Image (tube, rainbow, N blue to C red; front, side, top):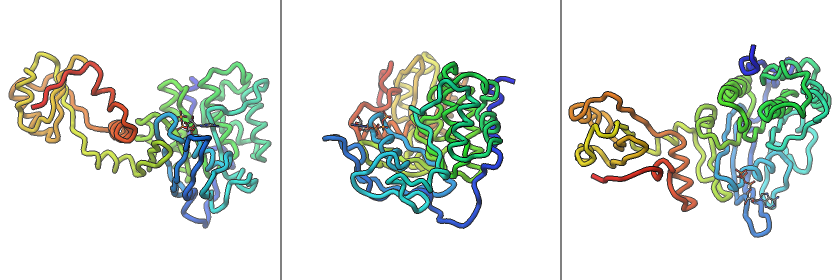
Length: 337
Ligand SMILES: Nc1ncnc2c1ncn2[C@@H]1O[C@H](COP(=O)(O)OP(=O)(O)OP(=O)(O)O)[C@@H](O)[C@H]1O
């Protein structure tokens, strides 16, 4: 079995989070700010993440995501504001929270001279996690076949999976994942999605920082988009996409329909030529499709509805004043009806 096929959502034995009474809120952030010199990295952020929620944190490079997450994790001190994890402050270092929280970062530290198995055993021992959890966790991230390989000989993607395993081995209730799929190939990435879905199904709370919009859309119950240190929006991907009311794009093979003819179809808002297609934007795709059918037939016509990436690109472009979606700029000529 390949390591990717082996990456199955097997919960680490004896590490399922205890069910029980407790506040519905896993994380409460109130009025948190952080400045580095004259750079306001996090600016008066307030946020609540419920227990069992899969929460995505998105935003352009430098938006303040890592700083905010490190403050939530208790690794960095906020200038102002408060953070509570399960009702307790993570700062100054709160040892009572350590068994309940797992952290995977882009710069996770490894015992590089150890094998993957030895490394994870060491991490498990630090947390007092049962040894049985080591094999189960390695299997869950698809590293069983690499368990005897020295950490320094693992590929980038395998190391990344070991970092994720290190965050999970003690069965934490709350897991912080910083771009967990950044170095993974597409198959391994999809396999990790299943691992993450299984963690959510077990009732764990996940805070997931990512630049992959498709990943956030597929996994997250809610997302926050951070821009210039402030939360621009917090909602479910579904609500954000619905509220965006973006036009549907119909893509026709070039030469099928004249641009002027296309622009004259009632309901067509905009016509562009992009990457070898004539693109018609419309908010009434039904009537426009039947008009296209009558004029040119529907053979080879593709439709594309808006997704979270469109919402994200539009919002961040408006808030940062940067150019809008690259899709609209690349290889594009435009014709307004
Ligand atoms: N230790 C530091 N000292 C000084 N400035 C810092 C420090 N850490 C971050 N910054 C600055 O604070 C801002 C926010 O950085 P941060 O790393 O939190 O953003 P981010 O959203 O995680 O970015 P990325 O997506 O690139 O990882 C940036 O302008 C960054 O240069």
